[in-house]
Structures are given as structure tokens and as C-alpha cells.
Image (cartoon, rainbow, N blue to C red; front, side):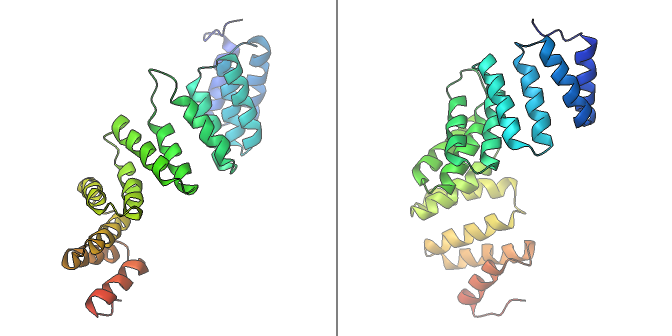
Length: 226
């Protein structure tokens, strides 16, 4: 039976879910699942409840059920990918997020983010750069991809492009101490010591516990920093 959004039982289940009453919400959605056996959304809701209760394996199973009912259910794929990521099943999580990229007319931004992040963890730098580049293209207003790409490009000695990416990020997030440090580090690699000092000074001013920037400053200036 097709899900009826005006069904009082369904409305009550949604209300319990919104209120965060997980026990009663689960009971209500399990009852709705008996009525609406072909509803992928009901399975998604049960997965969300299990996720909120920290039952990641159970949550992933519900998301699988939702996908079986609706093979192009990108939301279920995304939720499953996050579960697998948190469970440490990185390869399985990666494949799940990649599946989202095959669906047209869907937002791929967060899938690209996780694909980049996982490949970064796994040491697959080129794949990570590609994913973060996709994130920059699909979500240009977000600059978080710049940070990860700059780190990867630094490892590849592509310092000019790394500086460009960090400059874009600092334009919108000048208080990001770690970016200030990364900029100093990258400029130092380009042998622009005086410019690097400026950014190294910014980092501990924004984050006094930044020992990396303080150490770099001491090496460059012979001045002991507090």
C-alpha cells in the first residue's frame, strides 16, 4: 500500500520522531511498516531512529531495506554511507557514496566530501583531490574542500595552487588558525620566508595552543614565543 501522509498513525509517528521520543517513535513506525510494507521512507525513518540511538549496524540494515524498495533512494545511500564510515568500514562506505554520484539530478556535494575524506585517510591522494575538486564545483559557496585540497597539493609539491586555494579560504574564514598555519607552511616551501612569518604569527594569535606555528616562528625568527 502506498504511504498516506494524512494517515493519523503516520502523523503521530512523525510527531514522535520530531520530538526525539525514540522508543515510542520506533514502535509507531514499526506499526506503520506493517501497513505500508512497500514504503522506503518508513524504512528510512526506522534507520534514522536506530542511528540516533547509536545502533549503527541496525540503522544500516534499515537503510538497505529502504534501498531495496527504492533503488535510486540517494538519501538512504547517504545515510548508509555515514553509518559505514562511523563503523570504520571505509571501503564499503566509499562504494556507497560513489553510488550516489551515479544518480542524475541529485546533490552530490556531501557524497564528494566523504569520498575525498575517505580517500585521504586511505592515502589515495589523487582520488581525494578529484573528489574535493568535484565538491568545489558542485558547492562553490563552501570552501572546506580548499583546505583538504591544499594539504594534498602541498604533499605533491604543487605549492602555487595550494596557496591559491588557501587564499580563497582565508578570504571567507580569516579566523581559521589551521589555515593560517598551512599558508605559512606552504609559503615557506616556496622560500617566501617573510610572508610565511606573517601567517605563522597569525596562527598562535588565533589559537594560543598552536605549538606547531610557535615552533616554526622560533626557527625562523630566533624569538621565543609564549
